Amino acid sequence: GGGGGAGGGGGGAAGGARESVAVTVDGDLPATLPALREAGLQIESTLTAISVVLGTVDADSRHALEKLAGVHVEMQDLIQLPPPDEPQ
Image 1 (cartoon, rainbow, N blue to C red):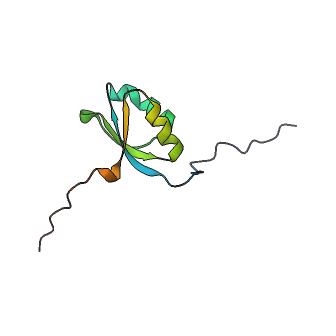
Image 2 (tube, one colour; image 1 turned 135 degrees about the horizontal axis):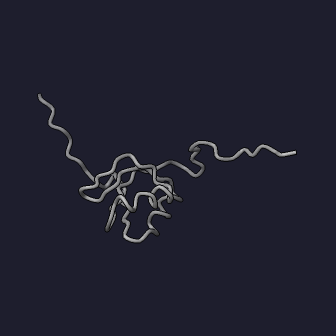
Image 3 (cartoon, rainbow, N blue to C red; image 1 turned 180 degrees about the vertical axis):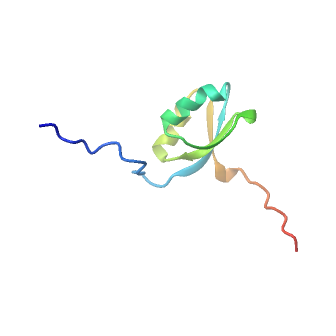
């Protein structure tokens, strides 16, 4: 009798919180996207003009991304956008 495998469930993060990261790619960004996904990057937006991908990773995925050639991973927390001017 074939047993039903309990695998492939959706996105349960087993290993802590996900971090928001900005990934800078040296070279062809569209060609690199599959490798980024393979490493575990959950892509939120792709800024092709400046070869940056914004997304989230868990700790394991971040290590995998950092091993890729020509890929630089930074925490999005380090990218400070100025707060919008609110009218008084």
